[in-house]
Image (cartoon, rainbow, N blue to C red; front, top):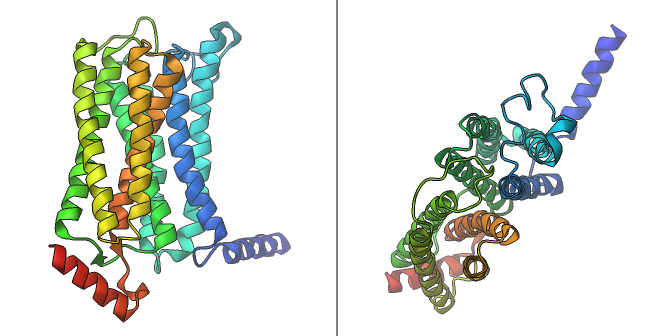
Length: 326
């Protein structure tokens, strides 16, 4: 009886220790979620760029007899198995995030739902990764794997934004044309990423010397990839000028961040193309694609805000400004 009482006491103390409101622990866990989801794209890119995609030639085992890599598999086996192990780190972070918001599920249901969806997305992503191995690194399945990673980065961005800014606001603090322009920008970002995936699938970095390519013309695909990228840059410049002129103080920093990511991404993209696609630049370009999706998501989210956090005078001023520009 004493043992059961001790267990109940420990469980009670643990439950009481969990946050009831957003505090530093929740913010750290939300940051860890976004950072980890982004970094695993980098490690996945390292697997591909070092030719280690089939370092573990089967799944879920690393070999038909072993769940871990063997010395005979060499460095490629170590790299591929190491990337698989990182999935467990993501799962651990997801569990911590879930526990930190579970007591808020009534007051902050959006945090609870996001933590659940992100947590469930991790093993699903692992299964898709396994399918890529079982299909011999089919470029379209590899592309789907990257798309799902980007979706998880976007969801992690939403989670982090909600942790800091609260639930979805019911007031759009921007003119309709500005909102539509931002959404069009998000579409061009998505198109840029998807076409970029097709470019990679046509290029030299297959993940293994025997892996198939998608048979698209790499040079043509690079040009097609640049068009939505430059369209995104132009639209972002429009958003920045408009946000400054409309004095959208809560939106401007996120648009500036988006523009900065685009500038670096374009620079890296042009440089890697001219240098013959060196592995390090291709890897950076992949990670920046996820950072770009995250920055675009933050811009979309920043256009809404909670009315109750504003003074009556500020609300009246914002509404007048928005009405005048619609």
